[in-house]
Length: 226
Image (cartoon, rainbow, N blue to C red; front, side, top):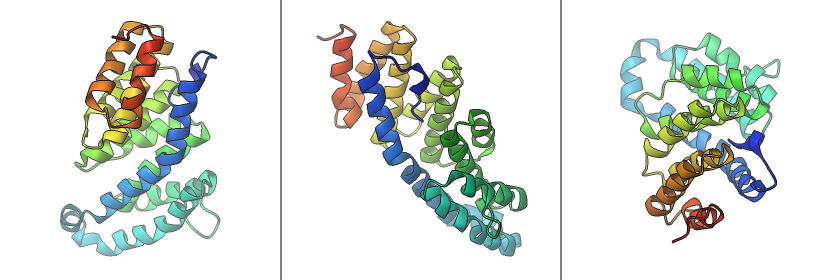
């Protein structure tokens, strides 16, 4: 599911493998943690949904099993349910006006991304409302960048990767990962000047991260060592 998986060449295989391994190890955990933040952000939701608390409560209960399937990599069951328990798509349809219904869109976007259905991934990610959470919005930009990159809409992918890297820089691991993906995508597009600029930014802005630490290696490959 790497952002640049479709562009893989022998020259870039080590870099692309690093990106894929990082994301496969961390993507679901990131979505789950941010999902919990969204659902538990009391003040805003308590005010907005006070008059429909029973429906909101039902939405929380309905999404629980789908979240379990998502954590287990059972994306089809997470999306469509198992016959007894609702999947994310039904939660969206039935509880769309609740926090759970909104959160299900983020999960659905990620699930479709892992299944390789990039158009549906974009559809649900665009419909998701981060409710003012800049950390969650940064993740959404990154996921959209992945889907757009897989669809070879490279300019749009780059735009989203750059937004993902700057929206919440306090999360250095996430920001550095998407800055790395933007730089890598520039490189595989043959736009080495832009790639060098972003790898240098990565080295300077996030030196303590895995991606920042490795930036010097990629600058060396591009002949940009000091």
